[in-house]
Amino acid sequence: MEDHELLERISVNPEVMTGKPVIKGTRLSVAYVLGLLAHGASFEEVMDEYEGVEEDDIRACLLFAEKSLEDHTFVPLFTSPE
Figure (cartoon, one colour):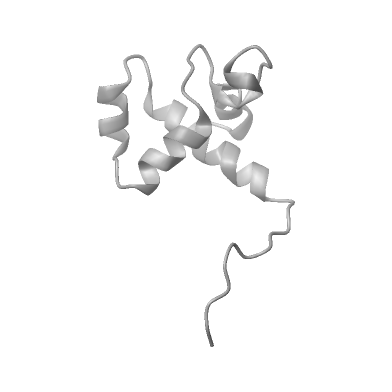
């Protein structure tokens, strides 16, 4: 599936979840899905827990995050002691 096809699975609407990016047709935010994955959930576990969510929806979340971070510079969240 091409990038634009995946990204069409993500919706941003100020009337849904205060404008946070969500999987289209759900109230499941991209940030929430990324958090699940970051804490060890598998694609299968996410799909089992949230009816109607497909593997390509989860891939769309990852791609959306990648595209969102592509053109930004970030300051470290913390400084490690030297």
